Image 1 (cartoon, rainbow, N blue to C red):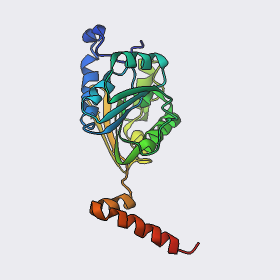
Image 2: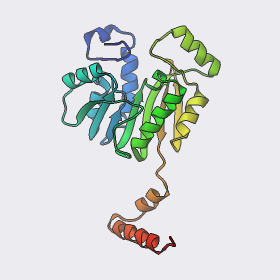
Image 3: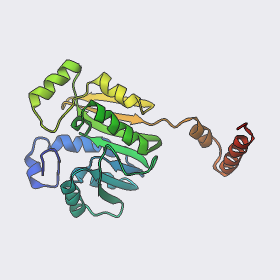
Image 4: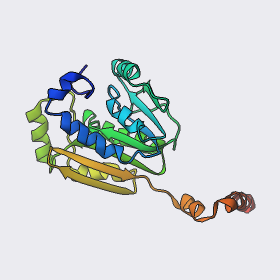
Length: 226
């Protein structure tokens, strides 16, 4: 299994200096998962997905690698946890079907164009008001990002985003964006999908009256000129 796919249940990871870092990043994302439908994409070998499942209503972990999905299915078997092989750039999932999407150390594995496409796919499957939560290696500016990418020579990392660049990528699809540089060399970020004016109006109406709201909007549409 690639070192890019952290498995903290594997004893060899206990001596790895990244053990505490992965634990910290998973804990950050886990805080958003209470009673939620969660998409972990990509999920690697499923360790983080299993931690989200301790709080979530349902967790779907997806990964492009068959090997990683097979390991995840074998090790983590919970009634509210499922794993599927899937391309994160073209998710075979319905629109607005999740409350939270998790992206831990993922966007750096795409070039700039595909990274933004990846964000757009996660936004598509999130419900209005849903959250994208993630972490990614940090750099303070364009030059520093290029230097870090060259210095680390990580064959799996294609792009290091700097703050303005990552924020712009997220703002294309999300209403609220928060980005925090952490001392361990990464950004923690979350982004909230717009609720939209229709959903804001609907949420303001008492639940027993919402069917009347739907019927009223249908009546208005029928009366409008074609």
